[in-house]
Image 1 (cartoon, helix red, strand yellow):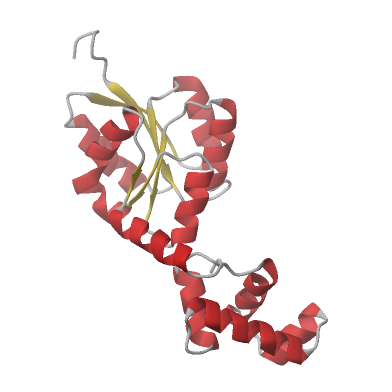
Image 2: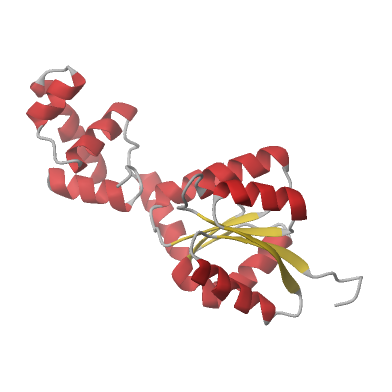
Length: 210
């Protein structure tokens, strides 16, 4: 690379050393990019970003101490021009929306890294946004559904935790009839067959956390 075309400087953030090694290997094979630093959690990511000011940051979503969404928000607050691609095994569209709302420029599934990562880095470096096709489809499907209210999300979370309507009513200090009404709304909005199916949809789409 000449000075006219400097290499794209990349920061890799993931709590799994093997994945960071894999990314490092892929980047090492590219003549137009270089790995400038690595980090194992969100806090380290912020420190390494401040130290190296990379062109593109590859950010794992789920990490100890500080997750990828929180780290993305913190970096973007300090460096509004930061270009961050969130990497995850998680196909939930709500998590993708959170990452993009936090300022991420891309959202890729880890199983597609070998085929999509290099082109994603180049695209994001030029200012484009990149989201895996299956995530885009999930987000479109979710947008077509009625959004659950905060109270419905709370009830869905308790359902996923194995609580009965009666137990949920006691926990939230409301009547069992009120809970039944909310559950009926949840099933309708999610297109679920029953409470268990609703919980599965909620977990799969990232509406509630496991």
